[in-house]
Image 1 (tube, one colour):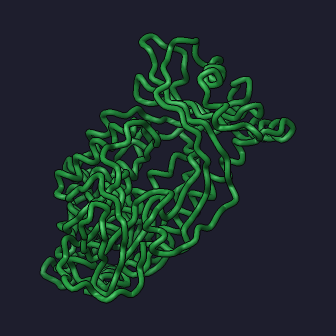
Image 2: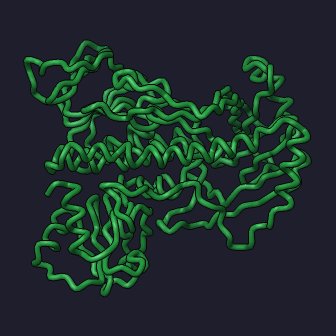
Image 3: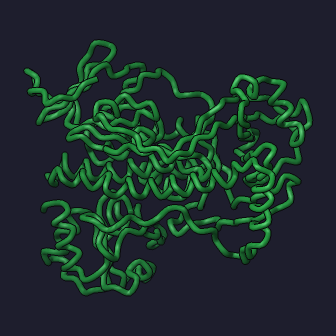
Length: 494
């Protein structure tokens, strides 16, 4: 692939507004959100079929809220099991520390659920197609060039695709990342783990019903309940241990022996993964951008890898739509990395620290860790563990009183986002003439909601006259309507 300052092609006609490279969860989410906003989207993926085996296993309430916008959240949730928390257990499986999360988050969705990824992606892909995105499977990108007007992709099947922008959602080995020419910053964390997905036989009992981090220095491992009849175990490779040796059927049987009687489950998939914490230095080069694992890679200890990619998609989709369809300044796209990189970096750092805590194999250090766990005050009933997901930092798209993910109350039986649609929302207690220039602007870009009529909105204001919510449901800012309008207009150039 290449991306010099090429002159425009002889035929500058556009085939679509945006090309999405990669049809995993991040690419599918981005394509669906763009299509829902009326953009012409083409997704290309070199694989012909959905990967049939599970990889990701958990998603959080923010991802479910993103799926709500796509229109498939209820169907996805129906096939999941609730994740009510996490136990750290010692080698003898006594509980060191237990954390419980509330069943429902402020977004109105389950705080966390476990899912079967192929089933999850099947629903997501069908939804994306129904929203009107064009999907080309079995077609890789052979070359990618950009110029002042757009991006030209030479596809592996000999065809050419011309779009305004291209977004690489093509995973950890991203070819699109090579077009941008960015390096990857390494956190220094690297551990290999064996992931074993089981298909339980009827009558298999005795397995934990919540996620366990087994802090056993002889073999750190993780236990993950999934929608029946599936179950997952993850085992850390020890120093000098090969992937081939630990993946052998006899070795897997030995690892599972203390958890499951022989013959009560079939191995659906086993694979060794090397977990990294990596962040690309540059996520955008003019008309080519990166999202998901192409931009950052998160160790799985918080279950945030796929979630982070889908957050990228939600952040980027409304900005691309504003630039392409509404005439917003191209500089709006610079806020994408500025907002998402620090956000992703915090999650990576927490996951790395979490991983180092779990991956302790020195018996003395492990004993000290366990003692510290036991000495720590036990969470009180109703206490929530601290969230690893920070607010967005201040910048052009986030004011000093913004950056938090907004709650989602019900208004007359409808969820807030369903009332608002895919635009901005202005929630206000300040009297507002609906014929005023401010009200006209907000109505043209989303919705105006009166908190005096809908008291459910009052908490969103946090004591200020009004609250402006962006299309990705993060708070733009809080304050007087005139100030919020001025900030939003400056952001969108309108």
